[in-house]
Length: 342
Image (cartoon, rainbow, N blue to C red; front, side):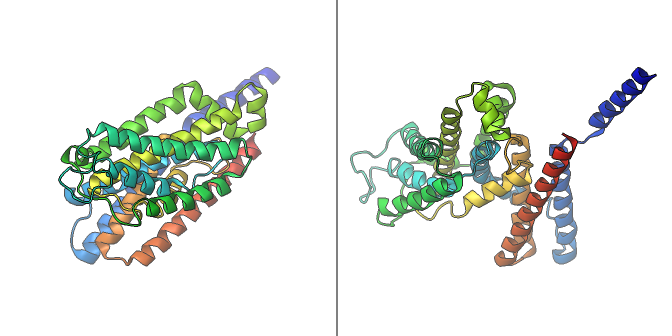
């Protein structure tokens, strides 16, 4: 009799697990709901369609692709239980350095007159190197100096922005080669974003790198006892986050055709917001790239929708902040439920 009861209970648990809707599906339904809401409001307020304008949708996706690239790196950092506040400033620094190696030879005020008309690969590699170096510094400060991630990356945020301004005394770096600006032309930023998303979705889900990342975020001490080199892995995760911020800087400078120290302002908060809205837990150990991609799209739809309706930018920031807080509250609720059922 007892065996029968236990078997019945186990079947009920299995059925409940099967009925549970994946987090990404729930977030996607939120995205659809927000898009439909703006469609309805568009007809009411402006007498026009929000979703049936391909040009508007393309601009929205292009805007969010750069933030999305950053958000993929930030997601991995948050999964380890950390945070990265430096990505926007690292983007600006890499944009400046990259642009300085991508200038045309007929520009009289080139930063490096002897290094003009270079193949597009060299500016790209320079940007990736600068981004990875910034991430390595963040990771080393956190792993070896035991500085809290918030403080370490906050210091990098201020320093990187300062170096970006000092690099050319605050002057923009312009007149970039057509070969380089092609990286940011058309739908290329979106293609790069999706390629990066697929790569790290596979890395987190199917490789040892992903298993270690989740293990460290769930319980650093248990990960250390199980033989994971936590310090080395943290440095790797932060270096990858920096590398992706560098890639975003390359794409941003190529798309704008210039490098400016003011680029990427507040992008780090948008990237964190995309990750959290996408279901990544600030407590660590939980998060998926697919959710972050949807989270970035939600932010993009909101920004485009509010602009479409003519809502003032100040109110847009208020709503965005409220959504971030709501996402954190939902995450805290999930954490409490997870602890109760554990």
